[in-house]
Each structure stands twice: as C-alpha cells, then as structure tokens.
Image 1 (cartoon, rainbow, N blue to C red):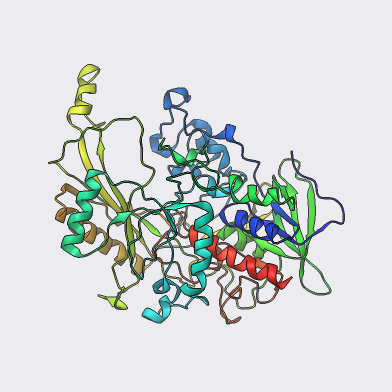
Image 2 (cartoon, rainbow, N blue to C red):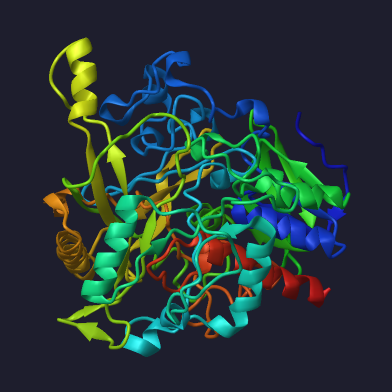
Length: 560
C-alpha cells in the first residue's frame, strides 16, 4: 500500500531513490533530526520475495538462460534487463519493465541500461565489491593531465568511508598500498588452492598484488545481522541480511527514528520550483499504478535515483535542464569497459568440484598497476583492475548420455582460473545523454537518449589488460589460455557502473554541482549518487557513492 502525503505537509528533505545512496541519505538526515520522505518508483521489498534458496528444479524454467533469457515472460517484458546474469527467474520483477521504461540510442552506439525499480534499488542485486578510491583517482587530472580533478581528496573522504564500512560490514584483507587504500575490514574470506597458486606466482614474478575481494558481505555477526552462510546466489536476496541492501540496513535505521516517510510506487517526473525564488520546493510524481499526478513539498530535494535517472530528472525539470548554465549537464557519462576475460586451467591440480555449499560469494582482486608511478605508458593513460577466481569446475560440456555423461562430467573436471579487466573510461564530452524528443515512458515522462561508445584509450587499455592477464596466467602455470577479443567486450552500460552526467566541481562554468553535490544554480537541490563523478577510477563505484552521500548529508544537516 502506498503511503499518502498529507496536504500542505512540508518535509525537511525529499529523497528520490531508495537504493545504496538513498538509504544512506535517509538514515543520515533522519538521525540528524530532519523530517524526511523517500520516493521510490518501485514497490516494497519483503523477504518472501527472496529466492537464494530456491533450487532450479523448483523453478518453471529451471532458471536456465538460453540466449541470456530465463523465461518467455522475462524475454517479453525485460529483454534488456535479462541480458545480464543477475536478472533471474526468482527476482526479475525487481527489474524495470523495458516496455514501460524505454530509452533510445543512435544505431551505432548501443547501450545496455540495467535498472531495478523496487525499494532498495540495485542494492538488492549488486555485486557488493567495495573499494575506496585514492588520490590517484581523485586527482587523476593532476597525475596525467587529462580531464579535471575531483574537488575533494582522499583525506577528506577517508572518515566517511570508515563510517560506511563500519555500519554495512566489508570483509577483506589490509595490504598497505597507497593507491589501493585499506578499509575498516571484517575478516577476509578464504582463498581456494588455485587462488593461492595464482597469488603466489604473480606476486613473485611481477610484484603485483593479488588479494581477496573486498565485499559488503558479513564474515561474522555484525550490527545485528548474521554472517554469510555461503549459499551462493546473493543477487536473489538474503534471508539473513548478510550483504548490504538498503531496505534491511540503512532504510530500516531511518525508519526506526520515526522521521521517515517511505512512499513506494511513486514515479518522479520533475522537480518543482518556486517561481518567485527559483528554488526547488518539492517533487512532482505519478502513482505507479493509477497514474494519478501528485506533488510532495520539501525544503530540500536530494537526488539518489541512480546516475542516469538523476540526470534525467534534472533534464525534465527546466528547459535545457535544471542547473545547466555550464552546458555540461548530461555530459561526460562513463562506465567500466568490462568483458576482457582471460581464462585457463591448472591441469596439474586435482579437480573435485561439487554443487553443495559452501559457495564463496567473492573472488580475487588485482589492483591497478598501469600508470601508477608515471602518467603514461605507450601513449595510454589511466589503467584497469582485475577481478577473477580459481575454482574446480565440472565438465558440463562432456559427451555421452545418462550414466556415461554423469561420469564424464566428473572425470573431465578441471581447475579453472580466470581474470577479467575493468578498464577505466575517460570522461568525454561526446559521451552524453539527453531527452528524446519523441519517446516517453508509460507515465508520459520523456525518455533518455544515450550517446556513448568506447573510444581509443579504452580500446587500447582493453587490449593491454588482455595481454597482461594472459602473461599472469601463464606465469602461474595455467594451460589452455584463452583471451577474449574486442568483439567480446561488453557494451557501455554492461558494467552497471555508470557515473557522471552532472559532475561536481568548484567552477560553475565547467560543472553542475559544487563540492557538496549542491547545484550551483539551485543550491537546495543536492546530488548524492554517481552523477557527480568527474572521473571514475578502476574500482567498483558504490562504496564511494555511499561515503560521499554521508559526507554531503553532514553538510546538509549542518546548514540547517
């Protein structure tokens, strides 16, 4: 049931979006004494929707994915969402209906926009890898001369990273690298035998760190939540709340204050403005099912709708875009170039895989080593990181039928090893989004038209990552090494790490928001998600989004 807003009620802040950053904004502001409302376009999330313990044989289509689609219903309603593995037969209703929520691209610039509309947003199904940026990232332009620096640095962000990590719980191993800052860790997950071999041999041969992934999954009881029991498919939900998702951590903390009004099934259309002052005075939205138009009043508007949705709201809120005096609203969107897979096998290790628990919901991480101590290598700037793992694997490709097939699946099992690169995308003015002049969604709101493609530096880094990945696997003793090629690279959007479009900066002529995420031109509108990124680094962005939201909320609450 949708919460109703009383006529003439004015909130201290209305937050659009209930995901990773929206949950943190709600918690911080409500605990600071503000009366807060959260608008969420999707429905409430409850534990009975979780499917992490549902075996394939209990699913109608056995959760299979021929062609990337798990069922005819998903293929019909969510053809774009189903192209990535986390959208499954148990959780597909969390993802947007692609028919109701269209977007467009030029024919030569395909983009895969993966979206969740449910209370909790993509924090329900995210990959949970949680890494801090360093000053190599915050001050990247100073390092190599490309683009602009963030208006903040690591020293300013460090306490907010710690605040987030201590609340949500991040497991990992401290390593002491300046450009790969350590976190406030819970105990790390264990390496497999293959992981240990890869780590030892790569570190000896190349001097490059191989470490266990840093993940927002509990390895011991923490803040009233149980440790992970390694059942495996975290993207389907977690009955023990062992990974961070906003409904059962930050939003729950906000609700406990008694100062949060959560309004689900509320599709925000635009920010409303006071004509006399030019300041925001609330948000217009439509009830998702009835299409009834409503408005909510607030002293401040906080956008946490996700990178592209927040930009879209600014674009729909004023001719030419709200706060777009700089002309860069919608510009400089980025994602990680993902898909540079290098794989092989350790044929001298006994492989005895099995389908039972435990299934570690984590892998290995190799931090950036390109252009750390110097700005360029062979004309390339920035770099890439790797994620991967080494695990025993059944030979599901084996020939035979019945008993012979079952035996071959075991007899031909191998010990696989693989890494895949996350290539940093440079901020480029010509990677941008705008409102489509002719397409609208099911609620009559203009759809986005996204213009983005990989450019020369990304493509060259991708090839470099493949070559270096193959060298590391070979040094570790892997055989049957296979490299992906550029044709295998995922399209922009597939990394699901999209950032930028309303970047922060000290100069109003070159940025949309100030160092606190406030629009330069409408200072009671705050951006607290990935839209404010001036550059993206080589690590997963969500931890930085959350820490920055906490930092900005502290400023908002202090300003009164």
